[in-house]
Length: 241
Length: 241
Image 1 (cartoon, helix red, strand yellow):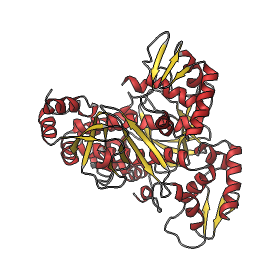
Image 2 (cartoon, chains in turn cyan, blue; image 1 turned 90 degrees about the vertical axis):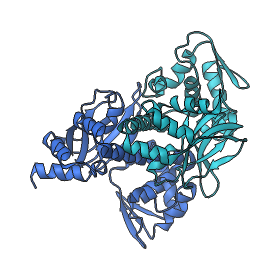
Image 3 (cartoon, chains in turn yellow, blue; image 1 turned 120 degrees about the horizontal axis):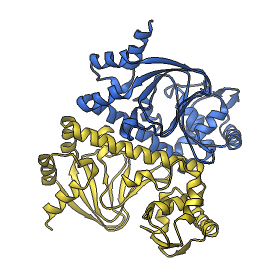
Image 4 (cartoon, one colour; image 1 turned 30 degrees about the vertical axis):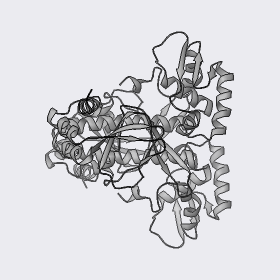
């Protein structure tokens, strides 16, 4: 596939652009640049002036914020097909977080100006953006809820369930998408806390962890343990959207 | 002031409606109902079918979710002038949380259908809604960050700073807006955790707590203690918007 074709395909797969006009997609594609970043490369820093938004083509992007004394809070870790930086439009044109490649990563870089103009002129894109924001809001609500109600082992169980095919029956193997240190920081835990919590989860549910894979006789082992302390029902509704 | 005047005034004070047309405000006002609710009254339950959205006229509304075993996660506690239930439009027309009056409370009840139609037809309202959602997203990001980086006493310090006039210099008295049990649940803490954390905060910063008032020689006592572990700068930017 040529770069131009890949770009158009990547754009059309983004939920935000499902009702976008062909001319808008063409305009975006024309101004798109594919960038390759090595592990550890910082694309932009929280509060930088925002002129681009991005789509992950492959690899992983970490969104985070840092305090003055260097402590880091991970906002999200995004796989291929995810968009970031786009809400800067509503943040006085500055990025609301920093972004870093956590492994060799390819992104599509796109001009915010083109998106901004389209949102102002095309109510359909504005509505798609509102739906996307509402979806993100629900995810954040769940995140806050879980940090209040679930203990650390339950939160790891929930993280694993959200990686699995939730309609699967019987034995299943779940693969961690990135290394355990990163999983810990995604869950807002210190590495030692994460390690202790994982041991407890293994004891409580009988799951087997081998390196980056987790083996279960059935998802029920985790559902009984983690979902009792969640206000949503299993399977997770937001994942099917 | 007549009920009709109060309704129009309440609507015009909502950021979401700052670019609304007079005909839309008139249409909303015509379909508005003032409701009085006693303490503990539940207005709607998470996942109920949504036909109304609300504006708090006076009193306090608690938004929350409950797990199957009855544990409660507080999403927010809203004072007068705040809107809730409006994002149900983007949630398959169901409420994403439950709402309860935490003291005798007056609300304005408004039809979601009228808002939905306006958002679809008027790009200005869609843009105002996007700005409001972005603002809420930032608040949630901060909430998640603080639950990761701040300890319990620091989070109480932050809560107090956000209640104060942040431009004030010298001695200041901060009034708790609702009782301490509710402050604890707003911060996602058990009452005992809150009580221990408040003692630590007093020791560390020298603030004086008398019932529902907190006395400080200067805001610096709390800023030094709480804001070092926050990625935003003081004064809090999101409060000035």
